[in-house]
Image (cartoon, rainbow, N blue to C red):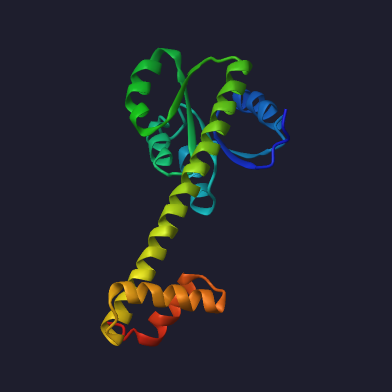
Length: 197
């Protein structure tokens, strides 16, 4: 098996010591998991103000709420995988409430093997979310670069009376002559000619 390069930050929210101990031994066996335990929704919410987590495991119910709202709220973040563990008798109803929010629901009691598989699924989902985020950032960066080039061309057109083709070629030539990217040239053109309107 390939060595894990990424560290996953895991928050366990559970008020049941026996469950916490058994889950702790499963998580501790994964050296690439850094974890901590909070025993109530309110203490978890306070902790979440200070730190982001890759995976949140909620063992419902909690002493101060059922855990469903916490799961839904945390799953809304693009970077967090939420596993909500509920009693088997409520599984169907709670699954229906949280499924559309992207919360993984697991029925209790569950075996150690099923919990290990759920942790594997959570890792896979973390990797997929990370990949989607990188692609999204790349697309966003590309859009910003296009906007930058268009703004520089517009300035060359309005200030120097060039056509769009001439402005485009001027930026390309300046970039080639100086061995820099078109975006560096565009930034310089904007800085020299933009009046801030």
